[in-house]
Amino acid sequence: MIKIRRKKSGITTEMLINTIWISTFLALILTIPALGIFLGIYFTTSNLVVGAVVGFGVHFVTLIFSDRISKRLTEILS
Image 1 (tube, rainbow, N blue to C red):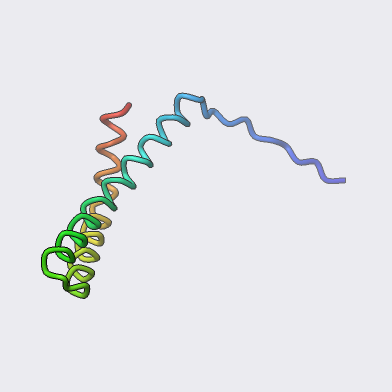
Image 2 (tube, helix red, strand yellow; image 1 turned 90 degrees about the vertical axis):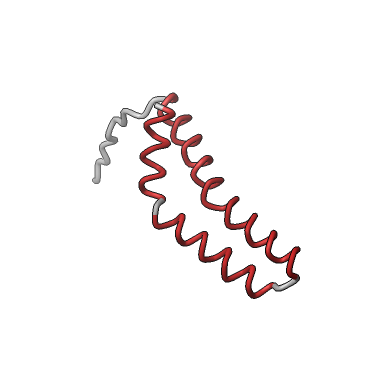
């Protein structure tokens, strides 16, 4: 017979809510600038390819700094 021992986790509801807010803000920070630049270029120049390339570029640059952004958000919201 196998006994599975459950580990007590120290996750409080405050920590869970804080994690959800940080994740939401991080998702907004990573997507809205790239999407705004993509749509701005697309609607002003009617060039889908240039808008997509610049938008993806901005998105990946923000992904590079996502660890720093996440740490800063954690400091602010804690």
